[in-house]
Image (cartoon, rainbow, N blue to C red):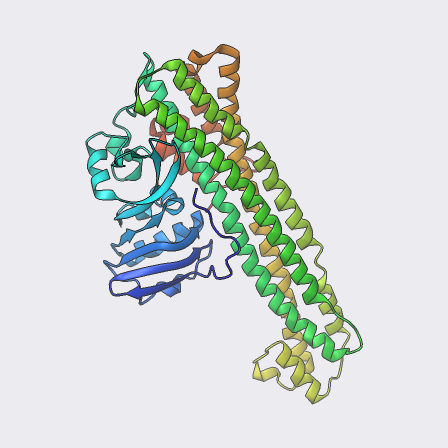
Length: 463
């Protein structure tokens, strides 16, 4: 899979226009500064996303709303598949043109997955003609059924089973498993982006906290030069520890995701290359299911990582040190007052010679630090969302592996099993990503099992 370099220092979202092409750089987090697009992005612009490291679900939705609000019709090119995986399911991008994307291809000789830039026009023709498994070049087959690359081709998505070379009376159930596996891959893929989004969001906030803490420490040293303050040093150590926690989890997620993608590739290769019997197909499906159930360690890692970061943020007592130092200090000299104001970069001229008014402003700054810490804690909810999505797929796949072991290969081609899995998806669904992906990949199941009006304690929907 394509990976994101979480060590990149410059993930700030920015754009650069070259003629009609607008190149996107950095990443699109949950709160992107879309003002960067004003005056740069115009109607009919060509948006090159090849240099975009990642985009969160919420960030893409925000971008889509921006484009819709401007009534722009754009052309997107070189879209990384991690990003396209979300874009294609969002209605705000349905009217936009996707020229090409960096998509997963299966090598017929090695069964390995590689990512290459593929043009969409010939793939669209194949999808419209009912072809699902397209060779983009000799020996390189699209890993994703072509019908799923084009959101506007709803008739193709609902127009019958995916074509497979499985010799069994219940071939339509085999098609369901491929549809479900595609749904599973996408929800796991989107959930893994939550790690990158959470790190990006939290590291930005921690950088702002560190900057404000440096101002406070400078002011404290002016007030009490004999005291040794280590607020910034402690903050830097915390940032390093939190960054390490994120990177460890990201590696774990990537390793397990690569393993599951490999078994998915083997499943699609076997069922689309040559005629196979039902038992061979279901054995490959059971192997894929096992690779998903093994993500239980990743799900546990999400909870552990979130708890560890939350404990570190909760132990930060620097704001109390700043409050104590500022609240007890009185009657600074004019020179000292000026120096303290410079340390906090206070520009308010109305409080220029007034220590009490200045102290109110400083206390507001300290309160703002506490608010930033609170925002970090809220951002950690992304770990819980990721854990939930993974646990839902694990529980569904445990049904598959247990049936396969207990009742044999043919049990997975029983229509009742399909109904059980669809029922579990509908009962589990608590995130916006799962809801949208369920409707996208399994529209019939969504219509019958999606509990869209259910609201229970603990349910969380993204935006």
